[in-house]
Image (cartoon, rainbow, N blue to C red; front, side, top):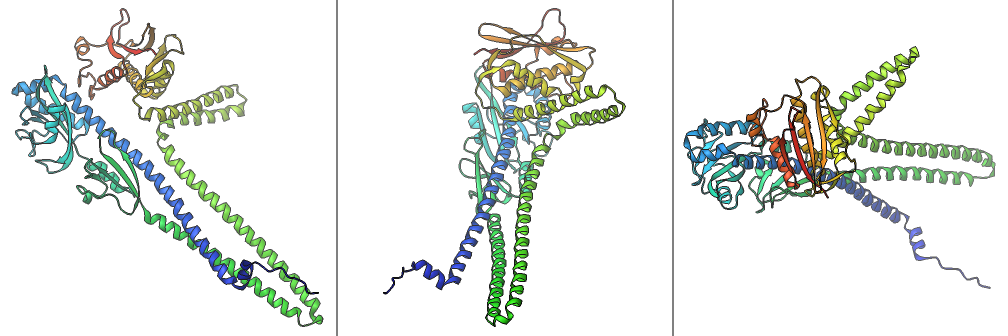
Length: 555
């Protein structure tokens, strides 16, 4: 009888006939996968870093633009600037005032144009590059401000030849345009910081022209970043402007090649080991074929070699475990490096509480040795201070977040608590106490969290400064609830305000503080009015000191 045989699959026959080809295909696939893995992980890391850097640089640029736009707006509403356009006699005084404001605000130059576009006052009035007497009616920022009230233009200066952003605001009286205030910003320090970084950064205007760049040679061009992983962020303060951050693709390629090299080295090592094993087994088989007389000797040799192979496999397994541990340690080291960068920003705020904790802990150890009951008290203080550190860092992160521009119902008590926590680290806070008169802790108002806290922090800080030389200083916060509004009164028992200061309290640049700019209360009132409320100075009978009334809407 002839027995039938089941045919073997072609794949099995091919694999048995061509083992080297299959090994080569496996190595090639491994090389490709290892290269892609290294390239992909590095690309994701570079894109993440570029995303973070782009967000930080956009925030820094928007903060600079917002500040300088506020400077132009405030100057355009200043009464002395308005009078200078009507009375040439006071223009030298206005030029000196603009010079002082330029130093305090960090702008490149501030100048005042009359209705014909001629500069009549400038912060560089006494320099060789003075703008006074020069005509700027041909500039777009002048014509836009005359037409729309505000304008901007990125261009090189007529006199200085240095490029910069010109922000303009119209100056008018009784509906009549008298002139235009222009604030020029030069971004050289910002671009220098970008140049020092490892990645590339450019800012393009709405026409595609590069106006800011980490590479000064690319300014004015219309070329985008090349051969990089790119992240784009719009600049909200300048419509049509875009910031782009690019990380080199070459780093990802190098990482992929490194991964492929490691895989190839491991494959070669494993291949050599397997080759040695095959060679040893072949020699063993040849020795076994020599005859039964060598059987015992060969069995001992096989046992010895088997033990050697087992030890070698165990050693290899131990090496693999060590490699895995090293990889875990590298990942943990990377996490710790990132954590160090994040925590560096809050180190300054927590230094003082940590020093106090260390002192109390040392004292507690001394008390423990003596059996003193003061140990429990000090440990309770340590716990309270660590909780305070947690609250401070949480409040700092939330307070630094950019506002969203939408009012929502908020708990007033929570905003007061956060504002007191943010001002508690001030040196003046130790010399005065804050009293909050009882009110409904669940009371809600219509506001934005961060801008509302900005107003309260400003009022509380002003109170601390007013009480600097007052014994038993006290800041009292009271709340009056009406049908549609809530009034928050912040009063101190300091020396109060002089009548001349009361009249100009909410006028820009009017201040009684040495070195003050006089914009804090002006900005605080604007924030309150943007939320549908108001901020005003009131004088409660019999209290003395100063008292401010913050009016907020109820939901």
